[in-house]
Length: 289
Image 1 (cartoon, rainbow, N blue to C red):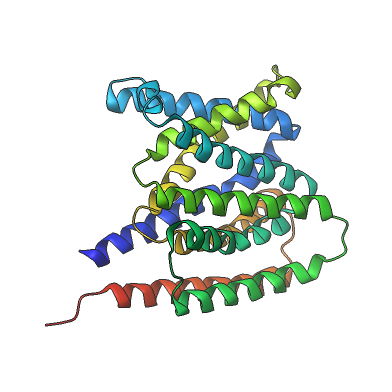
Image 2: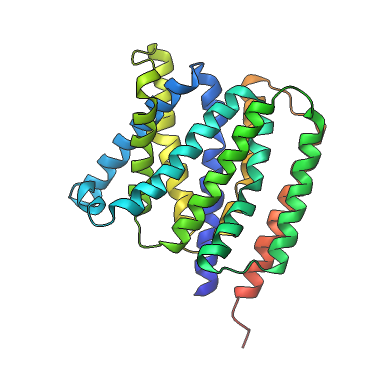
């Protein structure tokens, strides 16, 4: 039973990040200023998840928010900050730089989880995390000194926000994940409202709607749910999947070249992730009779 729950968490995290991998591509396809992307994406996320909650539960999300207002706002704020950091980072550096820097999220998550939840990082997980960092260093080494410092620093802040959010959710497992993502969407829209273009071109609005109504809500809900079944550190490790698929999708659809270092480093990352998942499953598996 425990093994099945762990596998469920692994699948939620993997497919959540796989869907999230389309985010960089959609940001580029929107060809819209970052602040406008954030407004419309946040608004669409809030609207779509509000509608989902009403249909599923038959009552307003405000009923849930009134019971734990501040925890929901706190968690939603960190997801909103992650959304801001990611979009601005993609617009100020390469997609590969952004997504590989996000691989440090497990370190923030592990640190916060240790401080708040007293979670212990298993030795094999720590080794896997170290291997993944080596893989990201291989990738980043090809673009050091390219003038993307601002975008890279924003990616670091995004990783910190994501790691903190996942650790917080691990401690507050009773909070409804969909409600948290809904709150983060409205917060993004609220913060971006004074500076956003409220009348984007129709073709750009279609891309923004796809991002906010389908891709981002689905990805964030899947990934957030994963922390109910696996540790925050292990869940955050799956952000590495985006390191490979994000640049790959941009290459396929927009022709942005993927350096050899990205392919080589990505192979190291995927190998580390697969090994850690396999070892975790073996540890949790019941002994054979």
